[in-house]
Length: 417
Image (cartoon, rainbow, N blue to C red; front, side, top):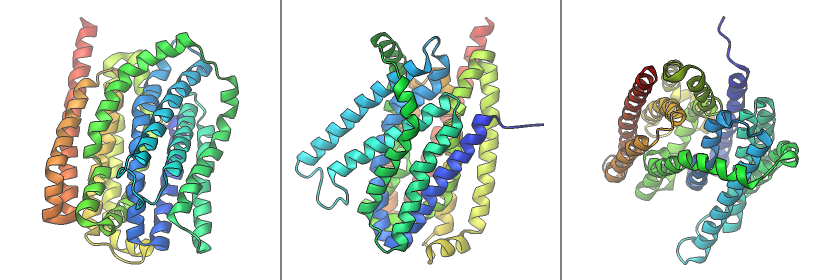
């Protein structure tokens, strides 16, 4: 009988909580603030997610891939290393926010968030995400779930209360996010008390993380131009924030499927690394094929179901239909299904420490979006911009799958020789 490992089960439950809270928060904000205000909120979140992408590339993803290959380094010493890395990254991000606030024109009064609040938001949410990921690699998924119950469940509960009381605003949303993220860190306190930091371990693991994280950061910076955040910015610049709010409202519905992508990040990279160590490239490839097929198949079925029910669901949730709602849902659904496959393949290439060629695939996709998306948005509106986004994802994912198959075949051949 097929059973899911404990870490996988907890990961899905945890991601249902996180994605569900994000989805319901979007519904509440749209109903309480309207599509235009929600569009502004969505654009600010793009910046927050960009900073989170830097953290994932430099700290979280290397930890998820390399923790099980740490050798004799204890978990408490590994935590010391990633906390040093997080401290350095937070200092850098705070410095950049400070510079943006001082340079005329870089931080305008029209932004609905002050530099100080932005700094607190970045630091608190990144610290909470580091805590939950550390709980996963140390085989404590229940504690990761509890951390997210406080951070994301608490956030939803407070925002819902403010909306029902008529006192909700975007400014209050940021304050709630900061407070609940910091509250979730209480579960990491026992680990922080036992944490050990020594120069030798920090230097050794920093070199290993830098080898993986350097290419991942470069890839992330280029890949951002072929992600939905860039598409929202192009739509906002060419069509206005109301269009952003409408697109994000439909995306909010289909983004429930994102729980599969996010939850796999909690176990696929580390399991892929284990399969490579125990069974070599054939075991790695077999594992990735199985996970990829199951995930993509399930997401495609869910997208079809959502498309059939799009009209009643959107009117039920938001009160009014959204222009091109079915087409937007299908475009984002296909984009997410390919994103799941892309993430699984990426986990395998991380285990193989082969990331250079992946960078080039993201360069190609990014160039396509930068060159074509503004033109497509002007000529064909929202559907034109999202169509370019999907085509770029198809090209990128096809190239990455080919690279993985080639690298596992080469590595297997070398091992047999």
